[in-house]
Length: 293
Ligand SMILES: *Cc1c(COP(=O)(O)O)cnc(C)c1O
Image (tube, rainbow, N blue to C red; front, side, top):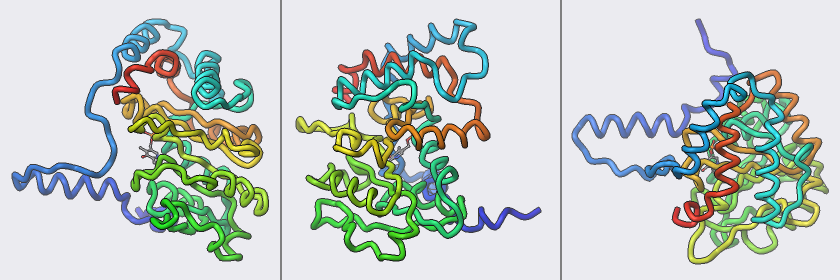
């Protein structure tokens, strides 16, 4: 038996490696405080758990879900985007559920990259921005996040050859791991860059609801023109204490979402509908809990 060359291209998953090291230290009796993977250790808000309990007793949720998602979920997400971010989206064409941001980011690589293509990846950044392109047979090109630019990448510094072969660009604000918020003008500049180089911007919005000191994070999709060139991946994992539930959505450019959906119909069979209904309840009602987080 031998693993594929594809799999040989990626280094051991960083978090898996960290978990191994932590286990090792714990076995030696060392009290380890992990600053690694972000995983809230308080329970999911009870209104979300109650919504799941109700939904799971309804046999209507027990069959294969559709990859397009239930109406209730798509409506809850688009209403949340309207009320929270001032972004208008068509629930029919501009939103689809995802099995977490991780699945979504990974699948976008398979949907948009061919060998020889590149994905521009914020660095440091979530490991799937680099592992995903490698598994798709393409190349990640790192965009250093520069402290002197407020942890924005210098788009002007991307080599001409890399601009030409880039099909995707990954950004993430509020940013993990730097903690930076979107620097002024970066989203606008990114829209122009994506237009000039015909690439899809993927904004990872895993932390828009996890801010403090009164800062309110914007959606990338609120930037003029963003929907023409980009999608946003919104995850309920961190803001709503739902890491184990695998509940997220992709929003924005209808053509890109259709392409993602086309890939998905060949890979998985959608998000458990009871989880979709619980996610919808979270987006509708968990304001107070999110603020406490
Ligand atoms: C946690 C995290 C994710 C993964 O989110 P899931 O929805 O749980 O898959 C993606 N991106 C960033 C930046 C994260 O920190």
